[in-house]
Length: 177
Image (cartoon, rainbow, N blue to C red; front, side, top):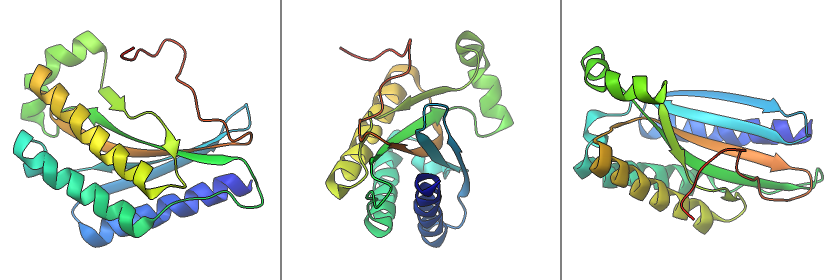
């Protein structure tokens, strides 16, 4: 399917930019075609530097993500039609065994990793993507203030919909308002 190939190509370009800016980061990618005909792809960025996992390091994390998207650019639909949408998110969790012990009770309560993500925006507009960077930074900062949770993984999710409709929330997903 053309949409999956396009998503994979875009995600590989993001991985290449990440690797050129900071080769210490670990990156992985997956993509799949859903039963409803939509296509999802995701890049996971882990081994986040300790200096980015504290309040004072969030501007560096945001600067890094902004740099990645300024180089990787946007993604537009071609002959396949439909629309591409992007969401940037964060999984919170331990990076080491010592952090695992500190956060064990929290993870027991939530039954695993806790994650947040920005609502999908158009992948065709760089300013929308950069607004996602600002949004995820503010969301991470808020959770760090409230819960003391450090970011463990940053993810970039791209979804293609054949009808050009923005992806909706998953059933049972909560939000503010």
